[in-house]
Amino acid sequence: MKMIIAVVQDKDSNQLSNAFIEADVRATKLSTTGGFLRSGNTTFMIGIDDERVDEVLEIIKQSSSKRGEYLVPPVNVEGQAETTYPLEIEVGGATVFILPVERFLHF
Image 1 (cartoon, rainbow, N blue to C red):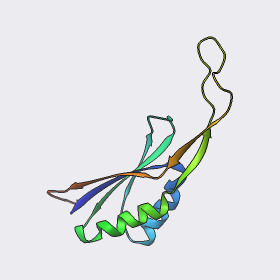
Image 2 (image 1 turned 135 degrees about the horizontal axis):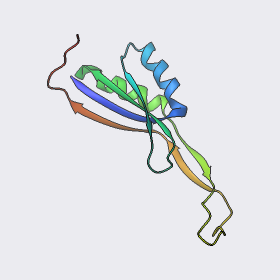
Image 3 (image 1 turned 180 degrees about the vertical axis):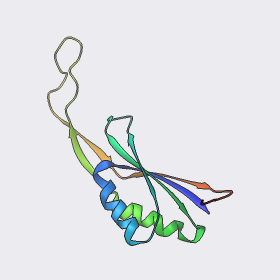
């Protein structure tokens, strides 16, 4: 058995949650906050049999797309921005951790 921890953007969480339901994958959904953009994330914790790990990874991959987003740079200390042009950054996708589970109990 494995524990899959997947961190996705909030924008992708409903689609991923629905995909898990359709595939009969049980997941615990946690609200989390990202560090770089301080934006909302969702972390899914999934306990799954070894044989289904690749299936779950494919579901995550299909539901969590990378995309471009524009960010306006912050104003510096003197009150003037170095550039007033928005910067395009890549957001989305998923960060996934796969951990071995020594023991699983369900009460």
